[in-house]
Length: 168
Image (cartoon, rainbow, N blue to C red; front, side, top):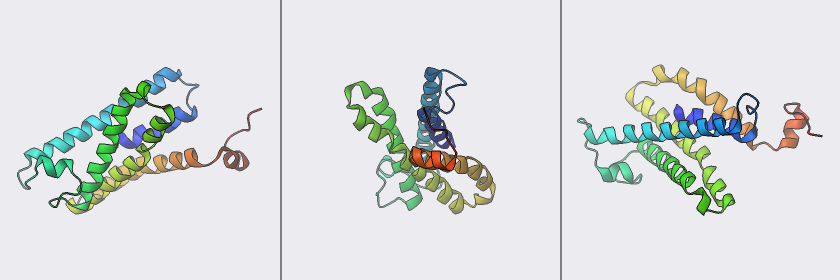
């Protein structure tokens, strides 16, 4: 959920749609705070499985997505979380990287969030909780998909559709 909110807020920050409400620095700081919380709660979720009694999880199973003990839903979650962790670390060392390379790495957040959504979906199906979480998931997933699509669409298409005004 936090990763979806981070994705939405990050798209709003990068496009400048909400910049009028608050300063740019406040928007960027809030995006970084959401991302840090999402990765932190993901780490807690991840580490809690080391203490699970019903299944035997090892550190190897939790760190390597293609381990023979794992399932597809765990693989989605592990890869998504590891991508988010790489993005978080790269943000700390951005001044030592070429900006375009960092931006490419930062844009991996889109597939990372997609993998985390798949992890949540398959986990809810497996555990019989889909009827409980589907509405909350859709409530956040639909705006995230819409904003991601608007972020990818070229500006001239948005201008022709009347969604944005042409700059003079």
